[in-house]
Image (cartoon, rainbow, N blue to C red; front, side, top):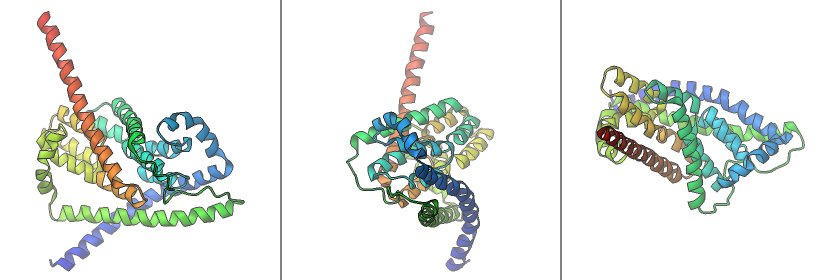
Length: 316
């Protein structure tokens, strides 16, 4: 097969899953984003913002930021982005909010997958919510002002009628839809190239030294790569298969989950948020830092716990 035929095959294979994924996401995103715009029109957003303003103000965010955050917690980053781009935010606020969203998206679904691979559902949920708050506090302390308006966020225009609002919403939605379709297609192309050329084992081998830095076993490189390219759902499926084949232990799978809940779908999430104007640097650096901290702090706590248990047994 020559290079032109190969490229054509890859492009064709990537199109079908792109259409399916995009259609599924749009069924979720479009009604949510329209509902948020209608809530703005009716003043419901202002009421919700007042409820959450005291808490979110500490994080450097307006109270209305609670809506895209909790939308993301219960759904996907795409649903959260659809809401986020419907609200007036500064670039600084959108950056803090985006990091919170990538740390907490699809929380019930992904925590259920974590449970299937040996981790506690409740602990995974609490950990991710807590780290999202800590990450927001961290960014609120170190980020410069960046008071420019978030490029895709709606302005504070007052619409005199619902048809006028829907016209403005539709124009913005078309841009977001086109952007998301393009991103998903590119990601599917990358996935097809990796699969066709059997690159995953080669890439994972080169990442083995990095696993030590993250406090993970060297053999976790393959799982790390799957989780960061394909996400927790695919990563969980691979992990369960490896558990069945006894290629990894439950303890190793649990250790891996503590890292991946902080840092998964790195390629996809970073691409999507960068496309709407969020700095890739803050997305990637924050996730890597907190994944590093979570694993090593947990290792330290377990070490201290083991030390005192051993001392207690030796005394008795």
